[in-house]
Image 1 (cartoon, rainbow over the protein chains, first blue to last red):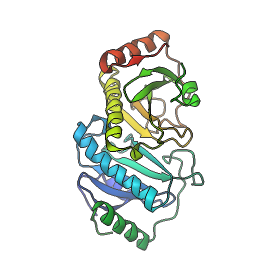
Image 2: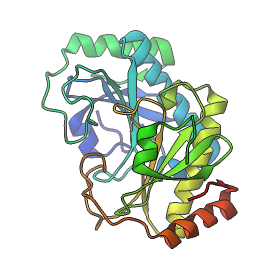
Image 3: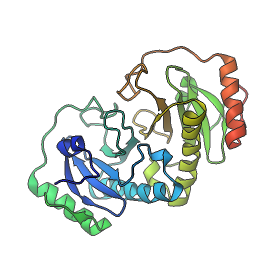
Image 4: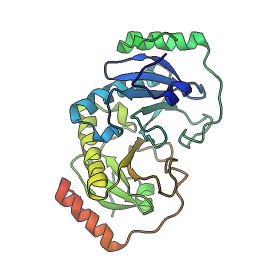
Amino acid sequence: MTDPNVPEQLLADCHYLGRLRASAVLLHRNAAVPWFILVPQTQMNDILDLPDDQREAILSECAAVSRFIKQQLGFDKVNFAGLGNVVSAMHLHIIGRHSKDACWPQPVWGNLPEGEFYAPEQLRKWQLSLVKIMALSAAKL
Amino acid sequence: MTDPNVPEQLLADCHYLGRLRASAVLLHRNAAVPWFILVPQTQMNDILDLPDDQREAILSECAAVSRFIKQQLGFDKVNFAGLGNVVSAMHLHIIGRHSKDACWPQPVWGNLPEGEFYAPEQLRKWQLSLVKIMALSAAKL
């Protein structure tokens, strides 16, 4: 999948699941934790620099992904962050965590060991759920 | 300073600068980077679980702190995160970063070496700026 709005490095690290109204939806290839990355359509780098209405539209999509992680995948805890020190283009991390995961309680960045890959049928299943729940415009996996 | 809404561990790690309408404003004692922590008044733990209007009120305050870091302190980059794996009560990190700081490009958590402390006059100066810019209700330092 190519998307001129999504940096190459993120495309290399992630599965591109599709698009919502304000953001592209990626899933990190490391299946140790459900690690979604939303890439908003903006030239700004930092979430807190956005105009209120655009920030709110993007945060609503992040909240929908967080609900998916909690309600559908059964996680109690979600980490949320916009960092961008390595890949500067805005991208927002939404990560399901639990007290038995591979790097709890550390944040995932730099601490999460290599994990399993996702099976293709699992990717399709999650993608289909996102299509149903939040009208994801699905990409070819 | 005591504030029943702010966890003891955060009070131990931070200076309590005061209150905004939706959140208490803390500044991490490690002065290596300007590391603000906002503690919203809520029983929820995860920012993305909040109702839209409450999330937006809190994000507006986070954005105001980010503007302070960029416009008054001269930083180009702000990291933003709600994690809460160690201290579960909701608290949001707003951190000025630059490419010469002590742990760039890593995130600060677990990577930032001990830094200088803030001089009392610097704390008072920043607190006074926040009073002027965003109507912080100042705490006794």
